[in-house]
Image: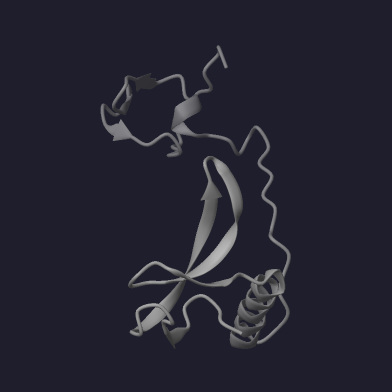
Length: 124
């Protein structure tokens, strides 16, 4: 079974090549995925759906083996109104098309910066 990234000899050009996965299109409609030669671009094989799934499982199992355990759930972060002290929401933030400048410090700030002098803007 050939998978993307495998080294093989192309049946069309006869050269040693790497197989790449390409989306086959019919106008603006996706027909499917095919495996092609990286050199000549001709079709070598169709992509097997179970091959994609096993590749994903192989990567996850390799990662869990590297980290030495099971995969964990993604952590969730919830900020209450007291913790949201971002410069983009501050009364002293002066916005224009290119930068956000702090009126108090007269410095360029990023939208997600925070400071101790934060005052919430009224028209949020």
